[in-house]
Length: 167
Ligand code: FES
Ligand code: FES
Image 1: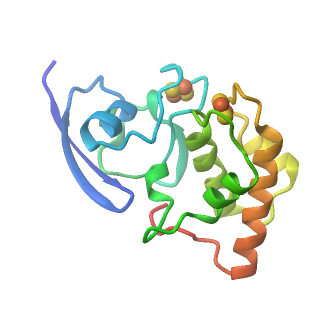
Image 2 (image 1 turned 90 degrees about the vertical axis):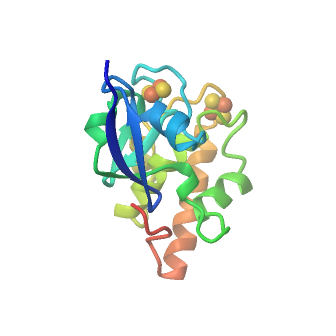
Image 3 (image 1 turned 45 degrees about the horizontal axis):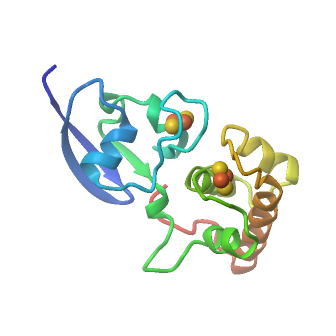
């Protein structure tokens, strides 16, 4: 199958890659863009380890073909920190031990980040709904809820819900 040009803006940076039309956005990000924070847990849309934002929407990047992402703005976990400063969510995940092995963590972070963009004070139920597509084999869910509420409180206090400019 012949390759085609795919244009992406990833974490604010423009990229042009050549990819076969059947290649997934997940593989493009990891293999062509060189950002391996986005994980491949199942390759079938079931686990959420590959979640990214595509034009501000949460998607499983293993279920998006490269041509479907052509021209899109993508936010990956590498885009959450700004100027070397971790996003409040990342700090809160570390401070509350919201992970064990960490394989699901990038997907959790992106799903929770998307939630905080639209909801500055999410309830426990709203957080659980936001991460319903993110499977954690280590069952760190309770501390994810704590982390999101801690980060939300910090962001509200600072009066800044954006956190990063790429979403
Ligand atoms: S790797 Fe995409 S949902 Fe599991
Ligand atoms: S921390 Fe291990 S899968 Fe979630």
